[in-house]
Amino acid sequence: MGRTAVLGTAGALIAGTLVAGAITAPAASADGRHHDRVGSEARGVRIAAERSARAGIDWKSCPEDWGLTAPIQCGWVTVPLDYAKPNGKKIKLAVDRHVSTGTKGERQGALIYNPGGPGGSGMRFPTRVTAKNPLWTKTAKAYDFVGFDPRGVGRSAPISCVDPQEFVKAPKADPVPDSEADKRAQRKLAREYAEGCAERSGWTLPHMTTPNTARDLDVIRAALGEKKLNFLGVSYGTYLGAVYGTLFPAHVRRMVVDSVVNPSRESIWYRANLNQDIAFQMRWDDWKAWVAKHDSVYGIGDTPQKVEKEWLKLRAAAKKEPIGGVVGPAELIGFFQSAPYYDSAWAPTAKTWSAYRAGDTQALIDAAAPD
Image (tube, rainbow, N blue to C red; front, side, top):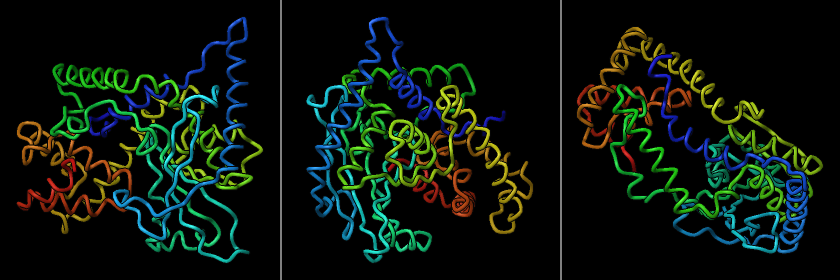
């Protein structure tokens, strides 16, 4: 597979490894301790759901720094850190909503969203209503749009593995190794990240799992006053939906999964990233062909091979001398991978690249450098 096939998956691989390790079930022991824990967790989620159903959600205007304006409302749902100990330590999950725009007769309940990741925030979901996106207009008449930050993410007891100021420093190490030095740099980065997770958030890591996030979903469902769950999951969110459906089959009303990942134990984590790289390569090739077809507009190359050559030249130059001092290969990959991710990014990505080639360096810096 060509070097361009690896489009910034280092962070995903690290995160996937951590999560995979966290959710691996302990082997059942002779004294039935594993069985007892499963039973305790099932009881714990029932207790938590009953409490949340009574408490509901105290919906208020969203904090100003959340960037969510009226009529979107925000609130909190309290859940156990460890569902086997429902009376033990609690954490709060950030949630938001846009109430359905239709009549009482049209309303079908709440629709909860997870965008994937793992580690993606769903808090922007209600903005699809306020943005008046025609794709969602009809759905918004039937459902409250509900987003949430999964445990460990955003404002929901967030895990901290590195100093935030250090995390955004650029340029970062090249994620596509050209040498043993590059490989050593990546191994060092992964080691420091994992050690940072253990040092800064180690006590929470065993509880930051997909099954617990699925249990959180059921508690949120109860807090919303819904008897059954309507769920929209994308990418990793499809796996979360599958786990929820396995744990709470009687609580599912409607579930839509998009960009589905294989939920089998053998395929869900590391293998899923490798499979995604294959898909990325295919879409990257499609994008290069599209750029070449529109060479009269972008002037990058009139064949996919020429576009690829220009990409490798750009990447090599940025590795030798980061653009603006902050955009190296890692930052370029982070920006350019939006093209194989989204068809809607094809033209903007090509336009920014074309502008850079024409002398507008700042356009690429603004697009690719960390915020």
